[in-house]
Image (cartoon, rainbow, N blue to C red):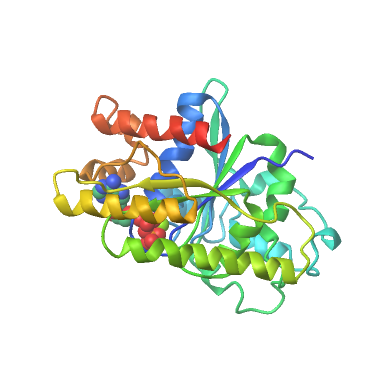
Length: 291
Ligand SMILES: Nc1ncnc2c1ncn2[C@@H]1O[C@H](COP(=O)(O)OP(=O)(O)OP(=O)(O)O)[C@@H](O)[C@H]1O
Ligand SMILES: [Mg+2]
């Protein structure tokens, strides 16, 4: 069985540009490097889904009686039988869950969409205790992909635990500001806690811990002294925790919100801008650091 490289984008702080980076990074791996990529939207806010798919298409593809595709919520409901992955039946047709959003020469970007009902998972009967539903899904579609990127919600939740179970590594998108220097050690503590729980459960499957690919700074405004000072502080914090820090970063710009309105990554909506170049650099560094 081919299990692809699965990377979660995690930060417990909200609104720091996680989803924007996740979508652009996933798209960039397919667009610039001809890789086969799946983006899993594991946030009930469904922002990554709504970035990549217009409101109108979202409604017709995923909502209501005429829906043609299934979402991550169906992954949970259809894996209700038993808690152990091994006791579950495989999905009859995993392609019902996959929506193609970009096709290149060899590379492609697919989406496993989310919707609001994901927030109820864990409060209802029968969703199991193992948090391995996402891993179970990836095992069934993994041979089609080089990378799977998971966009996580900014909460300690069942979704974060499922992302932890499914991933080999993680990226921390960080907005350089004072409160982030507190946030990264907290995140590290949470991930270590999840690892301890996993040992306590004697979970069988690998990996037993997550590798940190690194911190990627988002919404950077280099004109501000405060931003530069925060980056200096954060670099020290990251080094102490053993998290590499990316040399390339994402600048603060309204172009990113503009790109999301067009359902495009910044390098397609603004191909000649400096933002296209910086995103290409982030994608390149991600590949070299994730190897
Ligand atoms: N580099 C950037 N510069 C300026 N604005 C940005 C940048 N990246 C994202 N934004 C904008 O900031 C807002 C939050 O971004 P995004 O949804 O990516 O953050 P998030 O960390 O995923 O949020 P949440 O914690 O709610 O999931 C959006 O309106 C987005 O368009
Ligand atoms: Mg988000």
